[in-house]
Image 1 (cartoon, rainbow, N blue to C red):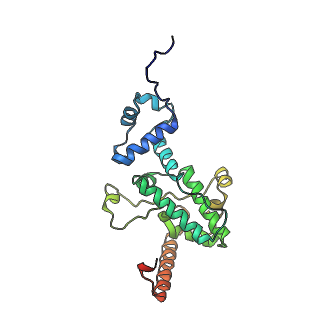
Image 2 (cartoon, rainbow, N blue to C red; image 1 turned 180 degrees about the horizontal axis):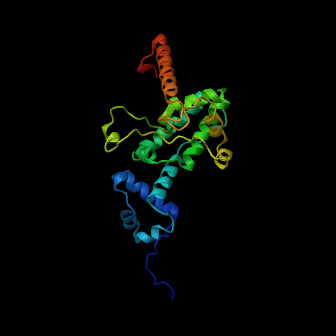
Length: 236
């Protein structure tokens, strides 16, 4: 039977539509309010319809994170590595400012998502193309920490620490299996480029004390350089 004239046609449900609606909900009400049930209600479908596109809420969160990471500007084809890296990190920060829930969602995942791995791999590629050795790039990635994704873990951020029983770190791409190493070669290169400590809290295989001191010295050296230049915030 032909469709009656004037009857509105329902927009087909797709994975992209589901994800964009979920992101809008999280942007508006926070990630803690997002559920498969209220997402289905927002889309005007029964909850079971969502499972044709996403297996569960974990897959939903991973896909939402990857969509946000996809908003980060790609690296330009040329330019000084520091300016390229600074631009991408600020672009990442812009994406997370548009989606305030994303930092907590990234921290909550036990494993880095494919888009995060791809982004981190491209960051390492920028460092290597800029002349940094694999060893130095390894430690710079530790020093940058979550900043490379556009946010930093604040010492006195009680909201971020609320309800947590132990330390939380950004998922670290270490000990990549062969298939992942082939897909993210720059991450694979730096993963084994430095000394290791199986008991590290920053990621299996990395020397926690060394990475802490390296980042501290790097920041202190930078601060001293700015002091010598007479730098003030008005000169940014």
